[in-house]
Image (cartoon, rainbow, N blue to C red; front, side, top):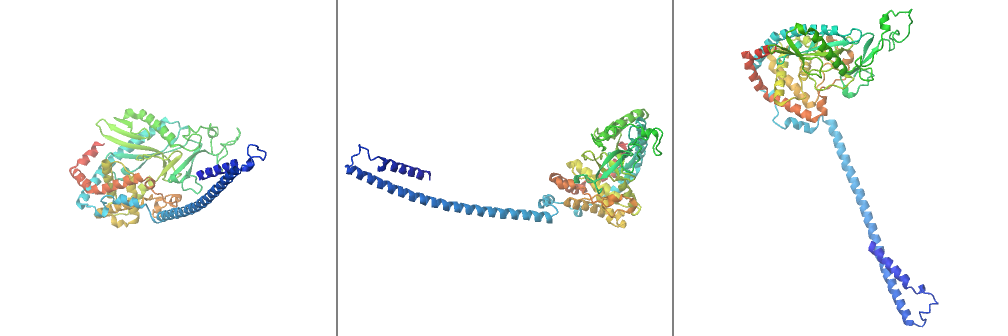
Length: 537
């Protein structure tokens, strides 16, 4: 195209320069009589005109070809654009259909089938070995647990009484009596170390109080990823509507409040730090509470340490009240004294941390624990099940297998609490008569099968929240009973690598279960485990 245009320009320039009209009539250097010169010029002009016509024809043909090419390219672009849109739309529709129809991605199924999958129904379990395991573990639990609990309860009473004495009754938080929770107080602890979990409720000093905002409250502004949590607001009595006005109004020297003393009315406002709140907020902070509690426990132990012939150390500086008691003989007892806030007049408690929890919600969100209700639920079943029931034996076996497998392959997302939740779901759904000791093998398979289905579906609901099967005798708060169920396996939905690790852990636990129980039972029969448990005291 550029070469043709250049040729046209050259022809036009030559025509102009050689045209006869370019020279004036008065030019004396060109004789009028020179016919030969004029003839040559006319011939040259004709040749230029022919060349010009030829070039114009070539340009017109070139323009028509380019127009056709542009049309073809335009049609081609429209065709491929439409084709790409159809393919993209089809892919999106397929993805939407698969998301609606499948509980989990297809490749999640491959996690279960990537190796020889083991099913609880195909496990080889010897009834005699299971029976011996249950007999010995029951003897150990009954024989050792009461000794440990008796010591721990006496020591905790003494330690908390000392803690109250070191606290300022007018400025510090008020500490209540402890409540025992967990496997030791539910009589299904079977493996060392012997660990006792105690929750210690505390309340703010007068004239302050706690106000609670639950995730399931109608007007709650708690994020969806903080299900099962709440916020604790520290308020002064009389600040809110319906409260007494003596704390916010000047009544004068001659007027007294019939509800509060003069000291209460004249009390100086405290800073959020003194009330253990998050910075620049009225909400109670877990970090501040744990720091205060750890300092108080340290001071309390310093006042009574001369009375005891053992050493007390903090096992974890990030967890307040995580104590290890070591006797001169080398025997050890582990205690977790956890500061909590009681939810009004219920048995639910906001906990600062969980002993086995590697992570905790950020401040100011507090997880709500129903451990006392769960302990009471087990007591409720114990009154209705056969006299020698197998439900706690099943829990002892699965937690033992889980602990041993964790020692072999490392930690996973599974915890003893998940197995306990699975057992409670089964207790609520099966007839009490099916839990006799002779059915321990079948019920053990039921617990493992329930856990396997929960892992496949990535769904394990909390046993008390939003569960209509919970007996009314437990008096679970109505707002909790009517709340939406909470999925304890939510982390497995969000973290694919963690899910794969947890599934492999469970599969290996099933595969190794027979060997682990068989190797452990001879120690029980020979009293080896009993001896090892004695050494922990």
